[in-house]
Length: 197
Image (cartoon, rainbow, N blue to C red; front, side, top):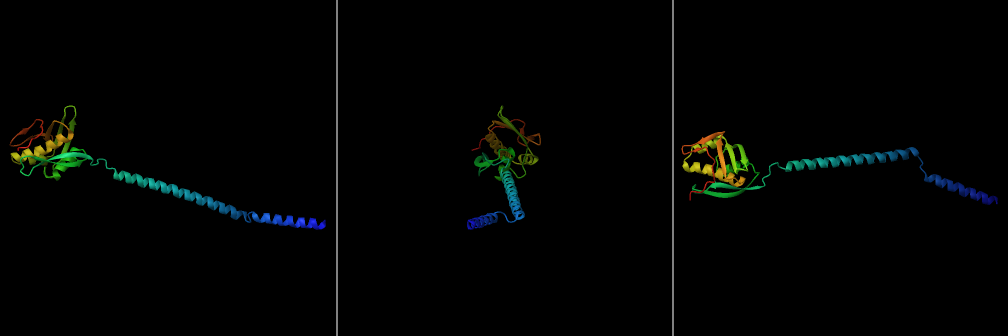
């Protein structure tokens, strides 16, 4: 009987030692390790959120750089002098829809001289008319040319703007003043210019 108690005591002591060995041996190292894990997790979370914010910022700045406020997405028919300068030929192009850009396209096609520019432009949809005020370069070009040159300079501008803005007539001034050439006083609205031929 004494042997049984002794062996039970030994077994119980071994069991206690075994269970004691399964627990944390150094409580401070365990809590330090868990606080390191939690701090690493917080740091990783902060890195992820700052990386996400950086990605969102990059994406936003990329989209604002790529989104042009006036994209060239509107088709325009440019009226240009033909080879004999006795009529017009047409060429399709893309514009941002402003009279300023359309004039720059006419300049690039040599239909208007370099330096021509729109100072003001308005459309009256109700009356199907528009007004364009050009700069002095355009005024000098139309007044310092022959009849045919004058016809072409007016015709290219007038026909292109009338067609694009879908209006019937256009009034043209230079720096707010009526254009007077050796051939005409342009104090009235102009309609579509037909070719000579």
